[in-house]
Length: 264
Image 1 (tube, rainbow, N blue to C red):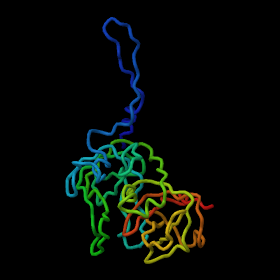
Image 2: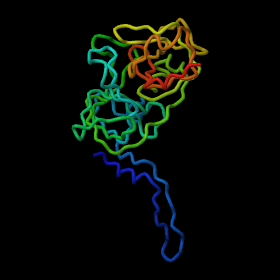
Image 3: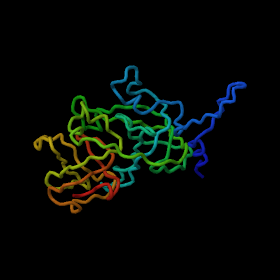
Image 4: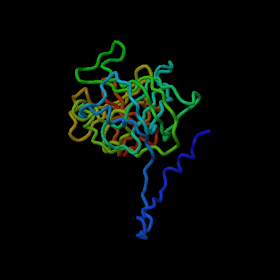
């Protein structure tokens, strides 16, 4: 049974502020959701923060909210599912999201869902390769590896952060900061058709200011739900696409469901 009673800590708490004999009325203080005393994700993942824990450090991160659980096995071999994406609770700042690799849970039978708030202890990694696939210079995939995740309370998933899709065309300068976060891009267009390879469906996204010949352009992918090539037309225009920013050579937007993909 989940500890929903923790939500009682999220309300307005009246604090007595009376000095002796002065008769001042009680003051009130609005408390935000409790996040614990550990690090925030952005304090670990932002390379611009001096003294942050380096790759390989074991870190304690408290008060993260689950934004998506990858239960969709697009390759149908059991190897393309299982990643859990988390974000600093209330965090819309860059570098506030990350993926969890092979987490363990307390209690052991816990199955998390979007909105659940967790505390994590695990190794922070900046992977320069996945197996034999070596990323370009300066490109890394940040992860928390084999963290122990402890459930704190139920909450609500965060609202997506609206970003410029062209941020995802510049990994080092602007794109990396959105990895693992829930974002929305607006007024984008599919370049051609969605393609499929071994179950993975992808298509390049373009917008005003995008170089159509740049193979580093961001893509939309079916990592999190069953997006089929037949679901959208050639050169389809979208009012918006919402999803988790993921990375494998290109930055991707992975919608969580059909409602995340809004056609024009």
